[in-house]
Each structure stands twice: as C-alpha cells, then as structure tokens.
View (cartoon, rainbow, N blue to C red):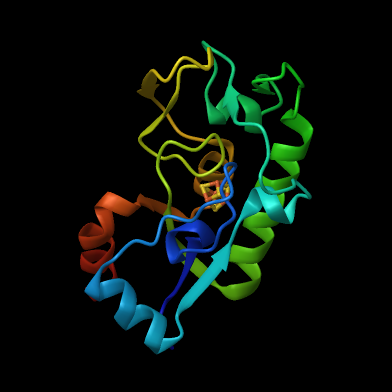
Length: 162
Ligand code: SF4
C-alpha cells in the first residue's frame, strides 16, 4: 500500500485561505502524488466551520500551537474574537482524518495558525513572524504524524523512499 499524505487543501489551489485564495504549489512531486491518488486534502479551518473569506487569526504572542492544543493558549482574529475552540476542533478533525486515512505524513502550509510547522505570525497582527507551529501541526505531531512544510517537499519524498 502506498503511503497516504495529508495535505493542506490550499496547497492544491483550493480557495480556502482566510482571504479567499489558494496557493497552488507547482511541483512535479506533487503532480505525481496527485495522479497516484495518495493525497488526502483537508482545510481544518473550513472543516471546523469557518467561512471563506474570514478575518485573519493569529496565536497570541508568547504562546505556540502546542499551548493551544493543550488548552493553555488562545487564537484571536484581528477583530479580537477568540476563536481558540474552533481551531482546536479543526485540529481534532485533522487528526481524525489522518488516522482514518492511515496518513503517517502530512504536507502543510507554513505560517498558518493551524498548519504552520516552522513559523507562525507574531500574535500582534503586524506582519511579523516567529518560530513555532500551528495547532493542527501540534495535534498531528502529538499523534505521531510527521509534518513537513511545503518548502520541505523533497525531505518528505526522501522519507517516503525509505
Ligand atoms: Fe490552508 Fe491550513 Fe489555512 Fe486551511 S487552515 S487555508 S489548509 S493553511
């Protein structure tokens, strides 16, 4: 059985990002995986019931996705609305999807308060970034799923070959 890969739906061009756009990662590997039918696309935020477009949200300053996953941190829209519970729900749905599909690997969009894996935004809605992961990545890693950012697609391919 070929490995299945959970993938951020926006990386496949689906217009599910907060601003109503997709990202469309152009890559030969991705095209091969799509053709092979091993990609499991999911947007955890849309799955959790968020509308598109929606206000941008950031993990509060000083907290990380691991804190939000553990119930100790919060995520706020730029309107000030606390959306932590809905983000945690999206993370739960991502774990459920990965387990049901048998995904041991995920390729997620970096920078997102959900899908980020190497960086997230500051928490001040000022465009600044910091090291850290989003709440979906924290939940997946907690359940043993290896998460790669889109710029690590070659590392993921290497893992699949092992
Ligand atoms: Fe993309 Fe993840 Fe944000 Fe959905 S939650 S738009 S899949 S980065």
